[in-house]
Length: 79
Image (cartoon, rainbow, N blue to C red; front, side, top):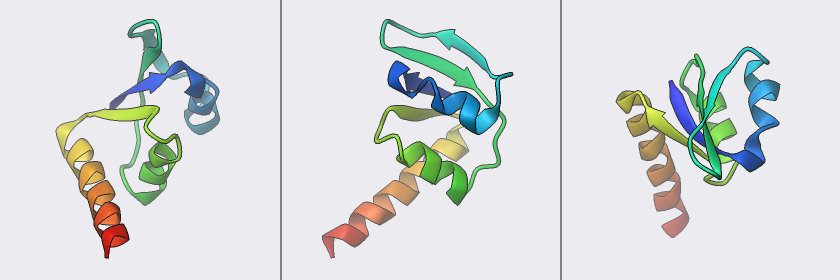
């Protein structure tokens, strides 16, 4: 799995995944991290907790599952 991550989140990566995470600079404000995860509520809550500064870019099924979860939460708030 890989994500684009804003530099303000730099400390959150080793705290969650350890120091042996592959990262590379993406642009002047973001970097890319490649991590092995078990997709699910714990991981998705970690991503959501950064308020958009962590973006799941793949694999597509994980990205879709996260988007569906966020949409479901948004729909509940509209009720």
